Length: 385
Image 1 (cartoon, rainbow, N blue to C red):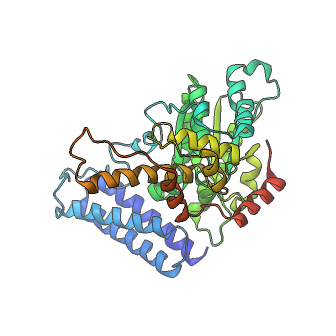
Image 2 (image 1 turned 120 degrees about the vertical axis):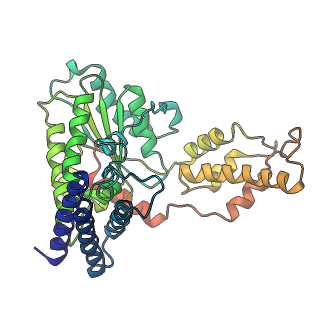
Image 3 (image 1 turned 45 degrees about the vertical axis):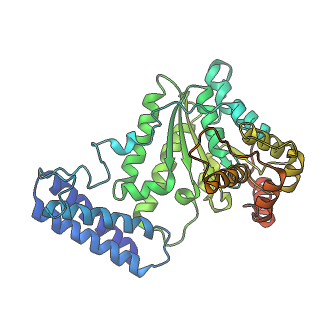
């Protein structure tokens, strides 16, 4: 065991001890244990200044420092004198709040028509999730339950997952992979198991979709891994094996999204039976996106959405939305600067083609040609529609 792994293990032990003592109302000994956890985490950051989990360790340090202040009675606002440790391990609001926070309380309300283009991805998701959910009896060989969506940021991966959840009225459990270690240091693998168990339980009534964003931050190839991270990854592998077992007819789906598929570890790639490329929009799709985002704007007759679509090659759908929003801000700003905004009878002027062209002259696409080549290469090696 390396020095970094030993420090992390000690930090975890001290944090667990502190939380347990805190719950028992043993304030002085809890404070001492929290301080030891803080010391080990700080040392961990110092000996590996470029480690990708340092931000998470610092977050834990701040949480434990805050808890110490509460216990010492130095921070009175919103604190409790009863020794309640509900905030000590990130479980604000109760024992299972960290699990509950993953479940969207409202329906996603994203439908297929809200996702412009991406017909290949839509078809693959229908075949893998929607049809088996509707008619499991005609799938004697089972169906894919691990779905990987990969591609540049802002091109619709999250929208696709939400649209699928809406179509099958699924419980949508959205997980930010980067936050798993942040919120659950020392309890991560246990909570991963809780997450999957909750998904299985929900699936007895309706399908469950576990959506893992930034998948590469959890399941990527990392060097100098410390113990906690390894255990979480192994727990995910174990849980996914249970979910994708062809003999298991339960409707639990794991949908992962990543902007860096080449960073994923091979054991995880294998567990996603469907690996779907979500590419930047082509000309026809960009044209539809411009029409979608400008339909509620006041436009001048000189607007040429075809020209705008031609000028935005390499732009993501999110980029195009930002461009349309910038045009809206531009004319609104003029109204406020004129001093007439208080008169609700006065409306902003119509957006002109020149407004869009000036905005485009100052913007560059978020997707570089070199990056597009990397996606194409990974798709040719690992893609599985």
